[in-house]
Image 1 (cartoon, one colour):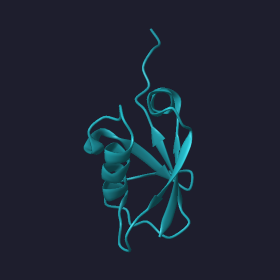
Image 2 (image 1 turned 180 degrees about the vertical axis):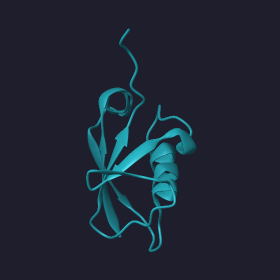
Image 3 (image 1 turned 180 degrees about the horizontal axis):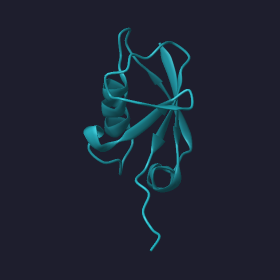
Image 4 (image 1 turned 120 degrees about the vertical axis):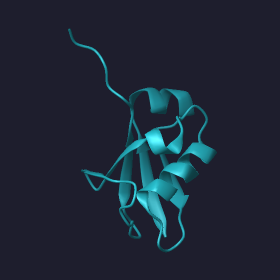
Length: 81
């Protein structure tokens, strides 16, 4: 199944692209998608540290993906006072 993966902020800068498509096997989860993305793209943190939103909703790493889903890899946010 094909999953569109969007990259934001520092992930986008490190990877040099804003979006990729990953061909995931049936039964893939957010956690397995994070592992595939980390192996494919330089500069991403360890897969278990990647925060992922699927179809605009934050999901745990055990969430099952479906063909055509859109995932967003969200880098940590810091700042403020």
